[in-house]
Length: 189
Image (cartoon, rainbow, N blue to C red; front, side, top):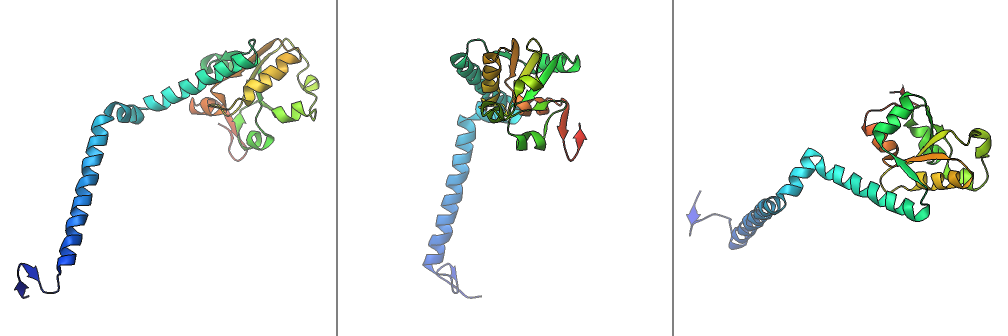
């Protein structure tokens, strides 16, 4: 192959400029990645070991509790470990306040699915289903920023129920903990 002025035949100055530009872009991208990892190393490390997700969940739960305090000072929360003990000892009714579609897709095994909207609209006579107003009731929804469980607790307290708690981590927290769930296509797991 014949070489002229350092270029192979058919290679032009434009091709050389393009190759140089691509190399420079790749170097910039690599430098940006290294700089980003270096400056954000603690954050990156937290994301890999699950600490970042735990911090996000804690912040969401704290926000939910603050919001509940605004709604109704009487709303109490229960943590996953205590909720599991109540579940294992059969000391509480677990009330899934999400929509019926969400409940039917998957829920805490043995829970009762009564959507908040069906109660508020009067479609469900909750007093007939939960006639003991002294019984422990644990309401829950989709966790995180979902406040349907809090709203259901407020509704129940307003109707005279005495022992109402909210599982702030909701169904996702329960499932992630490996606690019993029901999925129609898989049964109880």
